[in-house]
Image 1 (cartoon, rainbow, N blue to C red):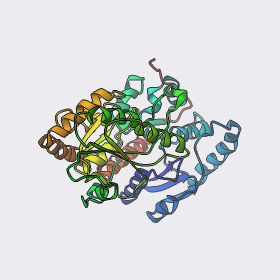
Image 2: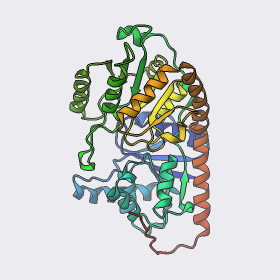
Image 3: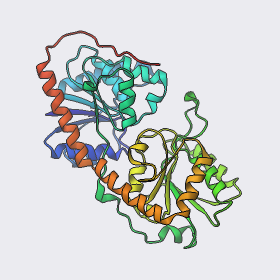
Image 4: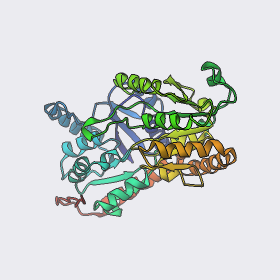
Length: 395
């Protein structure tokens, strides 16, 4: 079985490296098209056949897509994959538009997150560009339900999480974060681990995607009653969003209560998690996000109630769910978590078990391989025809 994967970046996206590595172990011949970058050699080291090509649709320079489509069609002709597996909206649109509606190769859009589905125009573009050869793999239950509600049949829709290496999330509390930033040993510490993504103004966003400003507001509220509360932000600006990163730091500096620490990008995240009393992920849109990391690190976790977070965070079982963009509700959850260490310990243990079950990359790769096999079998039995298959959408 030969599968061509499409990525728009060779920076980060380690989830794709883990997935392709495990697929190869299961006997899949993995080809990967992506731009040049630091991850390329890591893919090659795992046995992935790499093709250097930026396959993301060029929105800013649409005329450049003529050459891109030609290059993509040539790549498909050279590789001759049994399946094409795309991981981003922009690579999916290239795949569909370059090959057209009558190409027989099964094409999977493995949806990395729900953001485009939350906005009518982008959701319709996804559905309207799909043809009979197109299938979807949701990576959280919210996404799967959204496609079902928008007319995609269950026969064309699967569910496969982007898994992690369970054993890689066991950090050690060495106290280095406390020493580095002069945090008293008895100070309550909450934290967030995420890149800083600026608001997408064309989507009407006023605050960043990861809800950093909401967490700052919530900590300011809680710190009026909880002495010496520290909030640690681990992560730097994504891409060219340095100005936004600095604006968030300035916003925190204006607050009168609590101490806010910005560490920038670090490579000892598991050890940092081990020093937190509570991990907080107040995203406005998300898949499972950082919740899997904090749960697998054994840390009590609070998240917003968006996207895939509810797959992992079960109220009164594995953590605290709060409405997105609601600093007051977030503050109440933080207060409850800090005031109840036994509850934190219980939720963290139960959350670990659930995350280890749902997000084990070996299990996820097995799910994907079975999905591949089912598609190939289905297409072997289905008579080829040129009929189009538009999807009905709900507004």
